Length: 360
Image 1 (cartoon, rainbow, N blue to C red):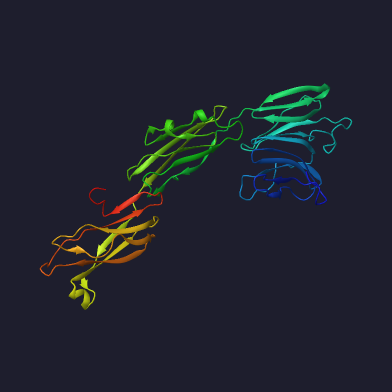
Image 2: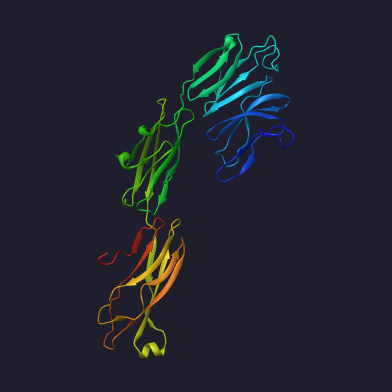
């Protein structure tokens, strides 16, 4: 809580980078609590005290009302997506303060994931100062007794950040397979994670934490592949995600044009120029560090140009031309020259066009 602007505000500071930001609305904001990225507090809005929540994990976090009735609320606490607080809505005067004569406070909870709101304390006596952790809420009642309630977690974990994305195509022949998962209440049991690739379980070779899984396969064939992920939280709720991705090669083409003598000097020295062109007909895939290599020609012809020839990167739809010169003996009318290209995909894998040379 901070009073620098004339009202009580809630501020958040990221200690590693030192950034500080105001989280709350205009007017007074009091008694914050935090669980993970979730911050809750009570704010005086529209002449009444209500509970507000904000998710710091969002790109543009905005305070959202948890309650919006005429009663006053106090002592808010949060665990995951479960919020508990003192509530005066059932009093004759719902705006009375704690300790006022003839006032009975209740404990309410709200699950932000399901939207369910429940009154936990309902015995006609004052209930104060709740706390919550996982599925358990506790509070104090009149005569200093402590009460407890179990709030069952019935929501399965949420799976996100699938990689490669479902339905995506990639030119990586060994793409990292990964996913993230979160649970709104008790957390994901990392030991429950099961990962399958093309019907084969690969869990034992995967890196697994309580927030995500990743697996690095060996080279995969250029077809469609299936992934299945199963995760369970500590309350026994299970989520399953199935998705597919396709490995597809970049559409590279290389053609040669008609050979010619570039000038009279080349003609005199029997240096024949052969033009080539390499094109990337892919819509999505770029290749980098394209290089042109050549094998020895036939009929005594000698490659005069230095190789490899660096062509650079080939973006989708691009074309690049290059030429090679050959020293052709006077007695040679025809010969065979073999040229191929090498390029790297975005994962660092090397691809050859039209195919790898002998011995590679």
